[in-house]
Image (cartoon, rainbow, N blue to C red; front, top):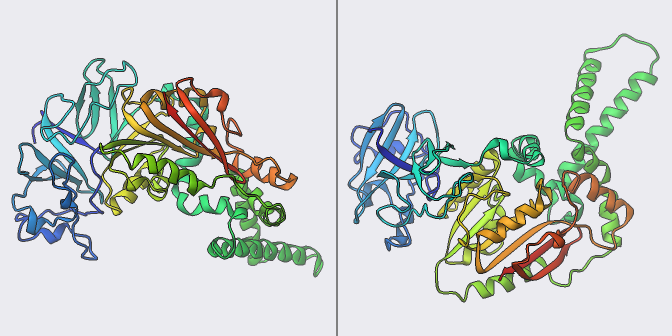
Length: 461
């Protein structure tokens, strides 16, 4: 492909579910199975757009519905092309050494819309000059106005400047979300809230906790027996293994002290929660049902932004998929956002992804009907600025909703220790920042939906 061809990758619908293409077939029609996963899952293509009227195309197969496929090789990257019924081309790109593929739109020159109208770049704004004109390539985006270049990660644009990030934001990204917590987020996050989860509903977590406790008890018993049981003796191989294990665990918990505090506090906190019953005025599900009820009455296609979207679990599970909406997800962590892309690809949900800073959102003002943030506001370096940005990109009459940690008033001493050392130890603030809300956010409601979490809902005037 020539250097003048522009491909906007990563902000499109991430709908291909792991495709390996080390040796592309010369005849893509007769040998398209080479591009299928080994478990012979049908190669799913979501080529639909809101204007093309092709929403039913979410499960097209290469062989039956896309007869116009051709392949072009550019270095180590292979491109599948097909021509839709309307002008313009769409392309799936898969690097030879990569197992993921993403949709792209191939088009020359800087534009804010593609030829089919479904790749809307006008919502993106350069974080430096605040302009919205782009040269978009598969490897980087370039602002037409200030010429600032933003690299892409797996086709997802990184629309922030590293030197402008807040210190706490960089620390959380590098230490937590690009580290152990982010890599194993789906397993660790439920485990961190172990004390509030009933054993019957979360038996796997409590079983894992029981094994950890038995392991600790076994190590302590062995050490006591080795030191006090038979008097002085030469160390054995088993002694060396146990000593090495103790040193490894000591280093691990030094790097991740919140996990050690969780292991120590989980049972006492669980007992305290059972004795000190909490009942919310409006539950988490009731608040969501109320706001969704109003949004479902609207006829137009909504724009939904999920800030710190991470794995996209919250966006997917809490009712937002019921809306007739175009979804955009932003996160600062590459590790987390790639998990979100893969998750939404498996669920076949069209969604745009961007790496960005919540305190300098790379979006035009008055763009989104719904702006969400689950579990991140309290940890930002500047929560006030993040809230101002959420209000800026929301449309007039738009919904702003965010959730994070806040201790309920009747919490016991042991519950406070768990809150401060496990759940909220990394945060800058520890309750809902009502005083930091910008004046354009009205009809503010703060709900204590769980023992350790609040949910804030507001409307932009």
